Length: 342
Image (cartoon, rainbow, N blue to C red; front, side):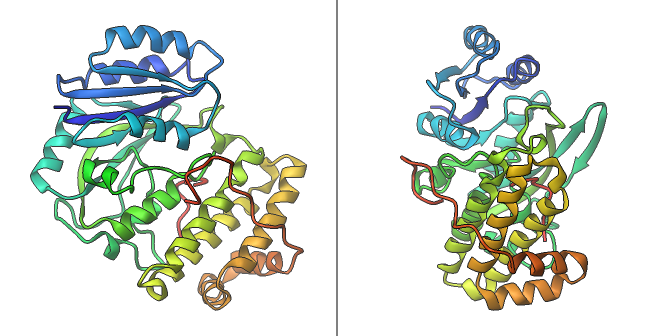
């Protein structure tokens, strides 16, 4: 029986893939499988993966015939996963040796639906530790109670899918797939859904994932139209949270986080191409008008200062219609910078 399935999408990461794959070899075990999903790379990544598939124990190579994006590549891996536990890694990040064995051991000991872990953020030669915003460690908790308070950074503001491990029962319940076609912010609806619908989780102080920042090909570094997918991602968060049995309790957090992310993008609008910048303003205006206005007003009052003033002005602009979902998706169901919280 496969104990752990690791889903690893790759797209044009020939510079970093060897390090990623070497770290997977340092984590291999007879009952682990590594689902290497090549998202139609156009550099030397396919050749690197072909060689790795022959040398890495438990490797399964899966190829997309066209580029689908991170969310869909992860879903392809999930569809093939056979493990009792499931986790993720991005094709330009890496692991410490033996990390997955320690992670699975903790998951088996705690027996909850999913675990969240800390990670190391790497920018060039600089490294910093990022802690999962869950103060109580190695204790089984109710994930719904980790959504709030609205005015503080909480577990739903730490959406990194690779910072944890997930029991297969969540996959069987349909809680692990990502919104099809989203090119950024794919993990935002995902983490909110986990916290609303899973029954238990825990956080542990395991540091084993190294998250590479500042990669030139990363969408967080590129100011093109793909960045605007955060609108569709957060629209889904609002829509699904509004249908929750405790919508009145959770919507203020969802709305405030959405506002913070819009303000972040508007604050760095100079990085976008001129036409994309115009679209950003119009689509953000539409998003603000689609939010529940009483909850939005409360959020803006609580935020105060320059951010609230910018958003109030933006709300008065002529809005753009909501962004369409991609054809052939799994239904409406990912951050812009994942560090942005309330």
